[in-house]
Image 1 (spheres, helix red, strand yellow):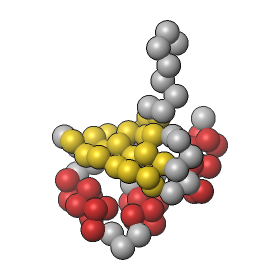
Image 2: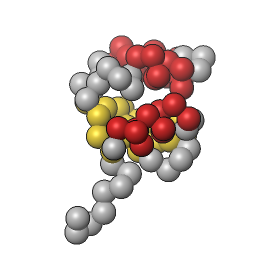
Image 3: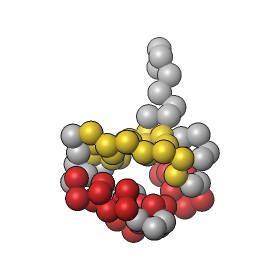
Length: 77
């Protein structure tokens, strides 16, 4: 699981992201989506305003917050 996460965060670009109540959801160009927990609003604002959101996220989000994949959740599993 960790190697798939590193593959995505190192190689895929950010397609979209949304933020609500310290939960940041990032959708990647490879079709995966991860949720990050406990993200302060100040970090989200910096992500929004970053010249390169991918670089900012790599440095300040991907390995700093608890995360889970939401892209491969399938009903019945």
